[in-house]
Length: 211
Image (tube, rainbow, N blue to C red; front, side, top):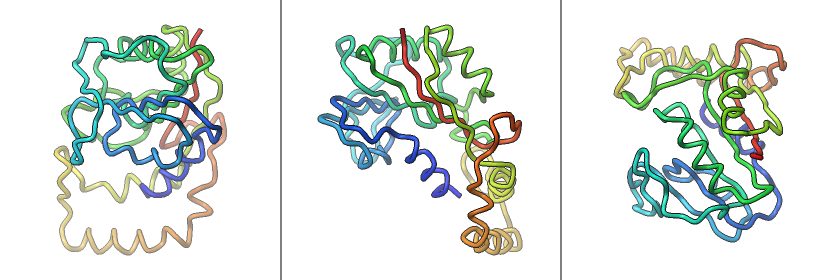
């Protein structure tokens, strides 16, 4: 299921040539290879396993990077882990060059994860209100993961508790293995896009421009 969602996020990313890109909350930068850019800069709250994060975030403090330095900022599956989203979005606004854009992916119907640093879920209306407070204009917004995808994802992760430990017994694991074997067969159904007015979906993808 993660692979299907990642493919949807990848398809939302720009394909044009870019100058400088900032990956905010980069982790292991799983989408870096998909972007054509002159420079790819990473920031996160801590180092990753490869120890290649360029800047470490100090909560509540500005990054030591000049204003208007980036053509694109990525905030991919990060916003739900931010305790002060207004500060971070204001910082991203500072770092974006004129005509630059921010790409956000954020889960809506998904279990608690990376606890205790899981703070929020945003509806399509909630994310637009949050962005409006920072003078952000939504260029495009897309719901991904229809009701069947969402139910399947929730079912498969029903045994994953806080701390990312799977508590399923042998029978539960066997059931999960069988359900995962069905994913390639039913992927056309799982990948069908939700309607704009659907209230059940897994993720939101948003492209934002700032005034």
